Image 1 (cartoon, rainbow, N blue to C red):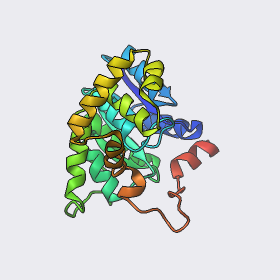
Image 2: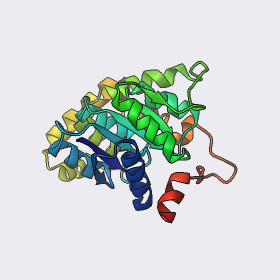
Image 3: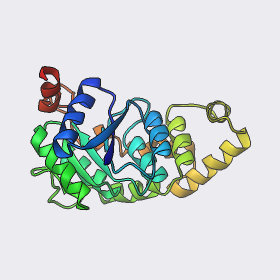
Length: 236
C-alpha cells in the first residue's frame, strides 16, 4: 500500500489533497502535517515507508524556500511534489533546481493533480502544463546563491532562519538547546558557505530568494486565491 504525507497548513486544502491522492491511488494511506516541524517528525518516523510527500511552499514558521530546503537536506531520498499557489515560472524554476519530483499549481483540477501523483510514483518528474520555465534564467546569480544555501546542513538552515528573524546567538542557542559556542561555529560555517563576511550580508543574500523578490505579486499585492481543489473539498 502506498503511503503519502500531505504538508499544508490549511485544513480544507489538506482535505482536497487527500481526495486527489485517493483518486490517484485508491488503496493508499495519507498522513498530514500542518507545519515543517511536524512534517520532520512524521517523516522521521516513517522515512522508509513514505512513497511521496506533497508540500505547500508557504508554511508557517519558515521564509522563502527554507521549508523545502530543510526537507531536502534531511530526507534527500523522499520524493517531494510541490503543490503551491506560487506558480510563477521563476519560482517553479527555482523549486525544480532543488531536485523535487514535480510542481503543480493549487489552481489545478483534482484530476490533473491525481495524474501528477501517478506520474511521480512511476519515477518521472512532473511539471504541470503552462508552468514549465522555457526561458533563460533572468538572474544567473540567483542560481549560485541557491546552490550555496542548498549546501547548508539542516541545523545550519535552522540557524540561518533564526538569524533572519533577528535572534542573537544566545537566543538561538536556547531555541536549539545547544551551547552558544556551537551556534557561533554554525554561524561561521554559514558565512563561509554563503561567501559573505557578516550576518547582515547573509540576510541580504538569502532575501534574494524570497518569493516576493523572485516573482511579482498582482496589483492587490496578494497571491492568487483561485483554488478549485479547495472549493472541491468545501463542497464534498
